[in-house]
Image 1: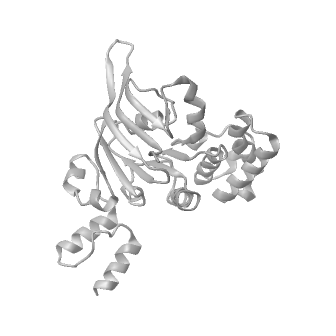
Image 2: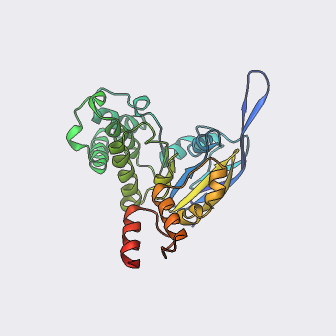
Length: 279
Protein backbone atom coordinates (compact mmCIF):
# COMPACT_ATOMS: atom_id res chain seq x y z
CA UNK A 1 0.00 0.00 0.00
CA UNK A 2 1.36 3.43 -0.95
CA UNK A 3 1.88 6.15 1.69
CA UNK A 4 -1.14 8.38 2.25
CA UNK A 5 0.82 11.55 1.41
CA UNK A 6 3.77 11.66 -0.98
CA UNK A 7 5.61 14.90 -1.77
CA UNK A 8 8.26 14.88 -4.49
CA UNK A 9 10.64 17.80 -5.12
CA UNK A 10 8.00 20.32 -4.07
CA UNK A 11 8.71 23.95 -4.82
CA UNK A 12 6.48 26.95 -4.30
CA UNK A 13 7.08 30.56 -5.27
CA UNK A 14 4.98 33.53 -4.16
CA UNK A 15 4.88 36.20 -6.90
CA UNK A 16 5.03 39.83 -5.76
CA UNK A 17 3.36 42.81 -7.44
CA UNK A 18 6.80 44.21 -8.10
CA UNK A 19 7.55 41.23 -10.31
CA UNK A 20 9.95 39.73 -7.80
CA UNK A 21 9.39 36.32 -6.27
CA UNK A 22 9.69 34.77 -2.83
CA UNK A 23 10.75 31.13 -2.78
CA UNK A 24 8.72 29.63 0.09
CA UNK A 25 9.41 25.93 -0.51
CA UNK A 26 12.40 24.32 -2.19
CA UNK A 27 12.95 20.64 -2.98
CA UNK A 28 10.67 19.26 -0.26
CA UNK A 29 10.46 15.47 -0.25
CA UNK A 30 8.23 13.74 2.27
CA UNK A 31 5.98 10.74 2.74
CA UNK A 32 3.44 10.21 5.51
CA UNK A 33 1.88 6.83 6.12
CA UNK A 34 -1.83 6.37 6.74
CA UNK A 35 -2.53 6.67 10.48
CA UNK A 36 0.74 8.44 11.36
CA UNK A 37 0.94 11.37 13.78
CA UNK A 38 3.54 13.82 12.49
CA UNK A 39 4.51 17.17 14.01
CA UNK A 40 5.93 19.96 11.85
CA UNK A 41 7.97 22.63 13.57
CA UNK A 42 10.33 25.40 12.55
CA UNK A 43 11.07 29.11 12.91
CA UNK A 44 8.72 31.77 11.52
CA UNK A 45 8.94 31.99 7.75
CA UNK A 46 10.33 28.49 7.35
CA UNK A 47 7.46 27.38 5.08
CA UNK A 48 5.32 25.32 7.47
CA UNK A 49 1.96 26.87 6.61
CA UNK A 50 2.77 26.98 2.91
CA UNK A 51 3.51 23.26 2.99
CA UNK A 52 0.29 22.57 4.91
CA UNK A 53 -1.83 24.36 2.32
CA UNK A 54 -0.48 22.07 -0.40
CA UNK A 55 -1.95 19.03 1.31
CA UNK A 56 -5.56 19.84 0.47
CA UNK A 57 -4.94 21.78 -2.74
CA UNK A 58 -5.36 25.25 -1.26
CA UNK A 59 -2.04 25.87 -3.00
CA UNK A 60 -0.79 24.17 -6.15
CA UNK A 61 2.95 23.44 -6.56
CA UNK A 62 5.11 25.75 -8.63
CA UNK A 63 7.28 22.70 -9.18
CA UNK A 64 7.23 19.08 -8.10
CA UNK A 65 4.24 16.95 -7.15
CA UNK A 66 1.98 16.35 -4.15
CA UNK A 67 -0.01 13.11 -3.98
CA UNK A 68 -2.83 12.51 -1.48
CA UNK A 69 -4.02 8.91 -1.33
CA UNK A 70 -2.86 8.44 -4.91
CA UNK A 71 -4.46 11.67 -6.19
CA UNK A 72 -2.26 14.37 -7.69
CA UNK A 73 -3.33 17.67 -6.12
CA UNK A 74 -2.41 19.73 -9.19
CA UNK A 75 -5.03 17.92 -11.28
CA UNK A 76 -8.15 20.15 -11.17
CA UNK A 77 -10.38 17.08 -11.35
CA UNK A 78 -8.96 15.88 -8.01
CA UNK A 79 -9.41 19.04 -5.92
CA UNK A 80 -12.68 18.19 -4.19
CA UNK A 81 -11.73 14.55 -3.67
CA UNK A 82 -8.48 15.69 -2.05
CA UNK A 83 -10.32 18.13 0.21
CA UNK A 84 -12.67 15.38 1.34
CA UNK A 85 -9.67 13.32 2.34
CA UNK A 86 -7.73 16.10 4.10
CA UNK A 87 -9.45 18.41 6.58
CA UNK A 88 -7.82 21.70 7.64
CA UNK A 89 -7.98 23.41 11.03
CA UNK A 90 -6.36 26.82 11.30
CA UNK A 91 -4.88 28.99 14.03
CA UNK A 92 -7.81 31.27 14.83
CA UNK A 93 -11.07 29.39 15.49
CA UNK A 94 -13.11 32.61 15.15
CA UNK A 95 -12.17 32.71 11.47
CA UNK A 96 -13.61 29.22 10.89
CA UNK A 97 -16.96 29.46 12.68
CA UNK A 98 -19.73 30.54 10.31
CA UNK A 99 -23.09 29.64 11.89
CA UNK A 100 -25.26 30.76 14.80
CA UNK A 101 -25.15 27.49 16.75
CA UNK A 102 -22.51 24.82 17.29
CA UNK A 103 -24.44 22.06 15.53
CA UNK A 104 -25.15 24.28 12.51
CA UNK A 105 -21.47 25.09 12.27
CA UNK A 106 -20.46 21.43 12.37
CA UNK A 107 -23.08 20.67 9.70
CA UNK A 108 -21.78 23.36 7.34
CA UNK A 109 -19.15 21.20 5.62
CA UNK A 110 -21.31 18.14 4.89
CA UNK A 111 -24.17 20.40 3.73
CA UNK A 112 -21.85 21.97 1.16
CA UNK A 113 -20.83 18.48 0.05
CA UNK A 114 -24.48 17.60 -0.66
CA UNK A 115 -24.72 14.97 2.07
CA UNK A 116 -28.36 13.93 2.74
CA UNK A 117 -30.00 15.58 5.78
CA UNK A 118 -30.34 12.38 7.80
CA UNK A 119 -26.68 11.52 7.32
CA UNK A 120 -25.66 15.08 8.20
CA UNK A 121 -27.48 14.73 11.53
CA UNK A 122 -25.62 11.48 12.20
CA UNK A 123 -22.26 13.00 11.28
CA UNK A 124 -22.86 16.03 13.51
CA UNK A 125 -23.81 13.78 16.43
CA UNK A 126 -20.70 11.65 15.94
CA UNK A 127 -18.35 14.61 15.55
CA UNK A 128 -19.66 16.40 18.64
CA UNK A 129 -19.38 13.17 20.65
CA UNK A 130 -15.77 12.69 19.55
CA UNK A 131 -14.74 16.18 20.72
CA UNK A 132 -16.93 16.05 23.84
CA UNK A 133 -19.25 18.92 22.99
CA UNK A 134 -22.63 17.16 22.77
CA UNK A 135 -24.02 19.34 25.55
CA UNK A 136 -23.12 22.52 23.66
CA UNK A 137 -24.82 21.76 20.35
CA UNK A 138 -27.36 24.61 20.70
CA UNK A 139 -24.87 27.15 22.04
CA UNK A 140 -23.83 30.14 19.94
CA UNK A 141 -20.11 29.63 19.20
CA UNK A 142 -19.25 33.08 20.58
CA UNK A 143 -20.33 31.90 24.03
CA UNK A 144 -17.64 29.20 24.10
CA UNK A 145 -14.07 29.37 25.37
CA UNK A 146 -11.20 29.53 22.91
CA UNK A 147 -10.44 25.85 23.39
CA UNK A 148 -14.08 24.88 22.88
CA UNK A 149 -14.25 26.99 19.70
CA UNK A 150 -11.23 25.15 18.34
CA UNK A 151 -12.90 21.83 19.19
CA UNK A 152 -15.96 22.99 17.20
CA UNK A 153 -13.64 23.71 14.26
CA UNK A 154 -12.17 20.21 14.61
CA UNK A 155 -15.68 18.71 14.81
CA UNK A 156 -16.60 20.58 11.63
CA UNK A 157 -13.62 19.05 9.87
CA UNK A 158 -14.47 15.60 11.22
CA UNK A 159 -18.04 15.85 9.93
CA UNK A 160 -16.67 15.74 6.39
CA UNK A 161 -15.20 12.31 7.25
CA UNK A 162 -11.56 13.06 6.34
CA UNK A 163 -8.81 10.46 6.46
CA UNK A 164 -6.31 13.13 7.53
CA UNK A 165 -6.36 16.31 9.61
CA UNK A 166 -3.83 19.08 9.04
CA UNK A 167 -3.82 21.45 12.02
CA UNK A 168 -1.95 24.71 11.53
CA UNK A 169 -0.94 25.95 15.01
CA UNK A 170 -4.40 25.17 16.45
CA UNK A 171 -3.37 25.90 20.06
CA UNK A 172 -1.28 29.05 19.64
CA UNK A 173 -4.13 31.41 20.65
CA UNK A 174 -5.40 29.28 23.54
CA UNK A 175 -4.81 29.28 27.28
CA UNK A 176 -3.22 26.19 28.92
CA UNK A 177 -6.60 24.53 29.57
CA UNK A 178 -7.69 25.04 25.97
CA UNK A 179 -4.36 23.78 24.64
CA UNK A 180 -4.66 20.61 26.69
CA UNK A 181 -8.26 20.03 25.52
CA UNK A 182 -7.30 20.36 21.88
CA UNK A 183 -4.09 18.33 22.10
CA UNK A 184 -5.84 15.50 23.96
CA UNK A 185 -8.51 15.41 21.26
CA UNK A 186 -5.90 15.31 18.48
CA UNK A 187 -4.07 12.44 20.18
CA UNK A 188 -7.33 10.53 20.64
CA UNK A 189 -8.38 11.04 17.01
CA UNK A 190 -5.10 9.49 15.94
CA UNK A 191 -5.00 6.64 18.45
CA UNK A 192 -8.69 5.66 18.45
CA UNK A 193 -10.06 6.83 15.10
CA UNK A 194 -6.94 6.12 13.04
CA UNK A 195 -6.92 9.60 11.52
CA UNK A 196 -3.63 10.69 10.01
CA UNK A 197 -2.43 13.85 11.78
CA UNK A 198 -0.07 16.59 10.66
CA UNK A 199 0.27 19.05 13.54
CA UNK A 200 2.04 22.33 12.84
CA UNK A 201 3.16 23.87 16.09
CA UNK A 202 5.63 26.24 17.69
CA UNK A 203 5.56 24.14 20.86
CA UNK A 204 8.30 21.54 21.17
CA UNK A 205 6.34 20.00 24.05
CA UNK A 206 3.40 19.42 21.68
CA UNK A 207 5.74 18.01 19.06
CA UNK A 208 6.97 15.47 21.63
CA UNK A 209 3.56 13.76 21.50
CA UNK A 210 3.96 12.87 17.81
CA UNK A 211 5.49 9.75 16.27
CA UNK A 212 7.70 11.82 13.95
CA UNK A 213 8.96 15.37 14.13
CA UNK A 214 9.79 17.31 10.96
CA UNK A 215 11.98 20.41 11.31
CA UNK A 216 11.71 23.01 8.55
CA UNK A 217 14.10 25.85 7.83
CA UNK A 218 14.35 28.18 4.84
CA UNK A 219 11.69 26.31 2.89
CA UNK A 220 12.99 22.78 3.23
CA UNK A 221 12.91 19.89 5.69
CA UNK A 222 16.20 19.69 7.56
CA UNK A 223 15.33 16.94 10.03
CA UNK A 224 12.85 14.06 10.05
CA UNK A 225 13.17 11.74 13.05
CA UNK A 226 11.28 10.39 16.07
CA UNK A 227 11.01 13.00 18.86
CA UNK A 228 13.74 11.54 21.08
CA UNK A 229 16.23 11.59 18.17
CA UNK A 230 15.31 15.15 17.20
CA UNK A 231 15.73 16.37 20.77
CA UNK A 232 19.16 14.74 20.95
CA UNK A 233 20.35 17.48 18.57
CA UNK A 234 19.99 20.34 21.05
CA UNK A 235 22.76 22.48 19.52
CA UNK A 236 21.31 22.19 16.01
CA UNK A 237 17.85 23.10 17.27
CA UNK A 238 19.23 26.06 19.15
CA UNK A 239 20.96 27.27 15.97
CA UNK A 240 17.53 27.26 14.30
CA UNK A 241 16.05 29.31 17.13
CA UNK A 242 14.26 26.32 18.66
CA UNK A 243 14.47 25.17 22.26
CA UNK A 244 14.06 21.77 23.86
CA UNK A 245 10.83 20.96 25.71
CA UNK A 246 11.32 21.75 29.44
CA UNK A 247 11.10 18.09 30.52
CA UNK A 248 13.61 16.99 27.87
CA UNK A 249 15.95 19.80 28.91
CA UNK A 250 15.71 18.73 32.56
CA UNK A 251 16.46 15.14 31.56
CA UNK A 252 19.55 16.28 29.61
CA UNK A 253 20.80 18.22 32.64
CA UNK A 254 20.25 15.25 34.95
CA UNK A 255 22.17 12.97 32.56
CA UNK A 256 25.02 15.48 32.62
CA UNK A 257 25.05 15.09 36.39
CA UNK A 258 25.44 11.34 36.04
CA UNK A 259 21.86 10.05 36.31
CA UNK A 260 21.33 7.11 33.90
CA UNK A 261 18.09 8.34 32.29
CA UNK A 262 17.00 6.78 28.99
CA UNK A 263 16.85 8.99 25.86
CA UNK A 264 13.10 8.29 25.59
CA UNK A 265 12.19 10.70 28.42
CA UNK A 266 9.81 13.15 26.73
CA UNK A 267 7.04 13.84 29.24
CA UNK A 268 6.68 14.45 32.96
CA UNK A 269 5.33 10.92 33.37
CA UNK A 270 8.39 9.53 31.55
CA UNK A 271 10.70 11.51 33.83
CA UNK A 272 8.98 10.41 37.04
CA UNK A 273 9.05 6.78 35.94
CA UNK A 274 12.72 6.97 34.95
CA UNK A 275 13.71 8.64 38.23
CA UNK A 276 11.84 6.03 40.27
CA UNK A 277 13.51 3.24 38.29
CA UNK A 278 16.99 4.67 38.72
CA UNK A 279 16.55 5.43 42.43
